[in-house]
Image (cartoon, rainbow, N blue to C red):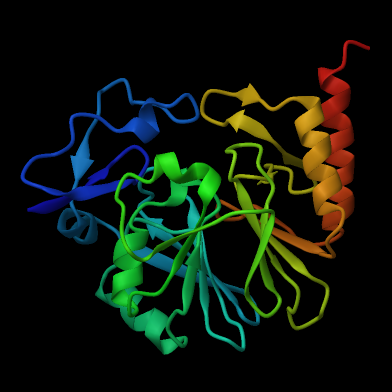
Length: 270
């Protein structure tokens, strides 16, 4: 029996003798099935062909991303807190080197994911570090392709999973779309880990919001204004987005405000 991983989105499926017939994550309009068709890999093949790279962004915050890029190509973050380390978002590759490095940084006490495109192999990550809880928002339960006892569905609008580390349901890209607010970086300024829910643009003085990124389908102006108003309640100076290099280093709340104003203006008839 083998765990099969979709090569287009990185989602893993329950162990079986043959790959699934299709990937519902990719068949949804927020992702896509490649023109070459649905293809699959396995954990062993993935580990033989790829490795995870690491970067320290500031004290207590590291990112890891797979090289050469695999599937969507997002990065995950390891956030160190006084109550244990949190893995924010996930990548499909967890190999021996990654396990050793994470253990050297203090292991993991919890995993939290922004939205279904990054569920990947959270079950294997949880098992590798002692069956730790994986927090997924209940609004996205239908997109869990590999049910597991480690998954803890949370409901409502916020959940503090460690002192100063709070999950915020922002919605938008997915109904349960979540960002993580870190209240206690070393300078005390506050940090937002945003996944795809607030997408840092190529010009990192801008962010944007889409319902489907690969198919370029926007959110409504009303929804984007709602996200702006929600995040305006939290104090943060920096944003770390889903992809390598996509960081807003300063003045992040004004970057969101200005970007939303322009977004709404471009959608307006006037």
